[in-house]
Every structure is written in C-alpha cells, then in structure tokens.
Amino acid sequence: MKQEIYVLDKRLKLAQPENGFRTSIDAVLLAAACKIKTKQSVLDLGCGIGSAILSLLRRIPDIDAMGIDIQDDQIMIATDNANQNDLVCNFLAADIREFDHAPFDHIICNPPYNDAGAHVKSPSKSKALAMGHIETSLQDWLDAGCRLLQHGGTFAMIHKAGEVDDIIKGLKNRFGSVEIIPLYSKAGQSANRVIIRAIRNSKSPASIHAGLVLHKDDGSYTDETENILRHMQAIE
Image (cartoon, rainbow, N blue to C red):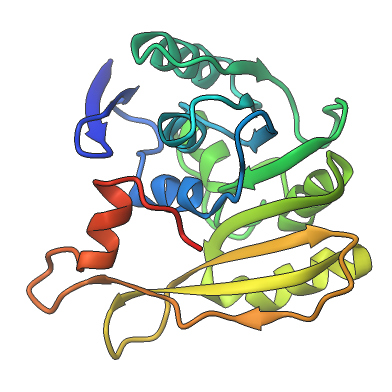
C-alpha cells in the first residue's frame, strides 16, 4: 500500500510506502543545501523514493540528476514519482559501495541514521535498510561520496548532530571548505540535526554557520524554514 504526500507548497507530489521509511523535511532541507547550477550533474546517494533529488529538480529543473538506492521497490516508486511530476531523473537500483560512474559535480546524501548492528532491527526489511540496521556504515557513505565526486565538486549530507565528529573524521583529508550548518528544532535548544557541506580536494578552512531554527515556540515553522519548505529558497 502507498500513500501520497505533498511538499514544497504542493509543487511536488510524492507516493511513499505506507509501512516503509517515511519522508521528512530532512529531504527538502538537504535539497536546499545543494549549491548546484543549471547544466551541472548531481547524484542522490540512497535516494529512497526520490524526495530530496526531486525537490532539487523542482527548484532547478535544468540539471542532470541521478538517484541510486539498494532497494528495487524504492527505485520503482521514485521513478513513478518523477514521472507523475514531469521531472527527469535517472533512478537506478545499486549498492553505494559498488556503484561506479563518471564523477558528478554534486552529491547529496541522507544516509541511515544508525550504523549496521547498532540497534534492534526493524521487522520490515525496507525500513531496516533505510534506518541503517543492516548493510552499511557511515564511513561507507562518505567513501562513496568521495569516490563519485569530481575535483572541486560539493558533497552535502544531513545527519544527526551527534555524528559531526565521525563525519569530519570520515571525510579525512579528501575534502576542505567544510561547512557545519546546525538545525535547531526550537530556539535555545541544542541542534539535533546538521547539514555538512564540503568541497572535494579543497584546502580552505572549515566554518560553522549560525544554523537554522525550524520551529517557533508554538510549533509552527519559522519564517526562514517556511521560505525553504514552501518557497524553495536555497540554504546559502
């Protein structure tokens, strides 16, 4: 069974499995963090149903887009989602650890938030894969991003704030210009998510952004978040 959701102020309609891993605003935030320009190429590692890459395509349609995921059923849904929204993206079923392709200008990645074996595995194989309960480690995703990105290309990942140290270590000396963009649920709280951006082979120093506060005290989105989620504003 599938259900339909709308994002980007109903500019994008997405079908998703009723019992699988659910799309969240993380996908839209990740898409907004990609500094792609027209005519450039982008790969979505672990694309799922295509939420992030299709959000990016809705903002900048004239790009060469590809998404890969290890799950065939997710790729089928992602392909249908692209067709239903009249967007062009090449979706392929592939393992990120083995996928080989000419290097891309940009890579976006919303990896599983749990390394394999770190938690009790979900009875749903699809959800277990999406949550990272089996198969891959965080380092696998970082290595794939490096391998598939051209010199000077940008890598963007959204992940738990508690993983920043491991992400920075995992990038090793292969990236520079590392940007840490904290995502705060509400003002005054600790960040629970971060976006990490980096440039392949750059020698420039790292920077920490002021970050993005997602919600007001009453639970509604802040104006900055509304501009991203509804008006397709990029995260600079």
